[in-house]
Amino acid sequence: MAEELQPEICIIGGGPGGIALAVAAANQGLPVVLVERDRVGGASLRDGSVPTKALLAAAGLHESLRRGPAFGVTGAPLQVDFAGVQQHVRSAVEGAAANLSRERIEAFGVRVLAAPAHFADRRTIHAGETVIRPRTTVIATGSVPVRPSYPGLDGVETVDLAGVLAAPRKPAHLVILGAGARVLELAQGFNRLGIDTSVIGQGPLLADEDPELVAPLLDRLRAEGIGIRERAGIVAIARRKGGVRITVRDEGEETVVDGSHLLILPERGPDVAALGLEAAGIEHGPTGIIVDRRLRTTNKRVFAIGDAVAGRASANRARHHAAVALAAITGGRGPADPEAGVPFALFTDPGLARVGLSETEARVRHRLVRVLRVPLAENDLARIARAPEGLVKVIATDRGRILGAGITARDAAEMIAFWSLAISAGLDIDAVRHFPAPYPSRAEIAHRVAIAFDGPGRAPVRPGGALAWLRRPG
Image 1 (tube, one colour):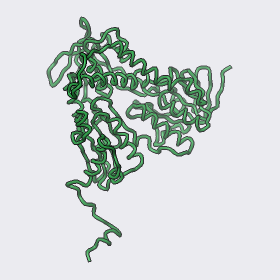
Image 2 (tube, rainbow, N blue to C red; image 1 turned 120 degrees about the vertical axis):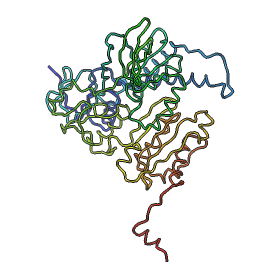
Image 3 (cartoon, one colour; image 1 turned 45 degrees about the vertical axis):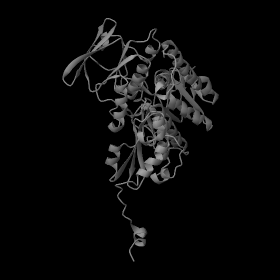
Image 4 (cartoon, helix red, strand yellow; image 1 turned 90 degrees about the vertical axis):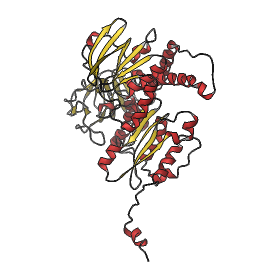
């Protein structure tokens, strides 16, 4: 006989958002069931952020040692043990997996079911042999790669990140197809480890980001020897002896790129096809499940979070969504806006990070906007570390409310946290102006940005009301 469960919350999907919500709800004493058809942890753990950042850590260390002579530090000739790098990545993934294991989640009081789930009706969920009738359901199924339709792709062998990291020999020339953030992370990581790397993007790289922030990053990647082709139409992909050949059309001319391995990082789409959303009365489209500002779907008993909802796929966005949804479900305190204050970070060197509105978005939404820029070259620590590339760019209203921030710099992901907090907490430029930062540090740049708000060209705000009366002459 099938088991029947009636928890307070049923969460479908055991990725970062689903786990964060399950643990937080269980900590509040709510009965929670988490259903995951695969291993808990999500794509970020196995073939996304964790292995990518582990690779970048190894590549960054090698680059630091390579640049040692510029600091007066020399040593034995550098070598890359690719098998050792692979082991480092596996170790990092295993360590992260331990923090997201089924046993650890169940220790918080969450019931975990390993089964595919689908809706039987607006309230009932079938998970294998188990029937679940929760008070509230949260869909946190994440996203899946959408295979592109390049001409000739079906006739060649491709690899994914796991395949490259398990290769018995270091690739001679890795060609990466794609235009997103992880493409550039992997390109720089592999290139710094001695693997010739080329990037081919059919559109502009990082098309959704501020070109002013993207330019210093691409300049650095090209200077490091990465072959970058933007807006390149792929004419054909074919096998060749020892690898693959990609024919591209760039500015009307056809050229070829030969590689030993072809890695494709396609766009991702919401993983909702097998959920039976129609039976539950949940509306959805190609970009994801339709939700309101509290992440509630068209079925008022069901919420959706993370990559299942339209927007940029990321683990930190999914975790933020988890807090928004839990606050809506319980009526407790928590963030009210599912997108405000959620930072995006690219972990290249220099990195790129941003939070809040871009300059373009701010000018559409606000009548008066001030754009504040401080180049990294004006920061003493950046000069000391020989990493002066990039800038900090902050968007504010004419009265000083912070609307957004973007950073291109080494450790940009760490630097953006300050501005994420400022936007989430509703701080203004005046609060930042009085922020004491250690010297020398990159954090000092925040203070420099605030000073720039009252710099040359500052248009005075016309006083009104009682203040205007007090300032009348005589």
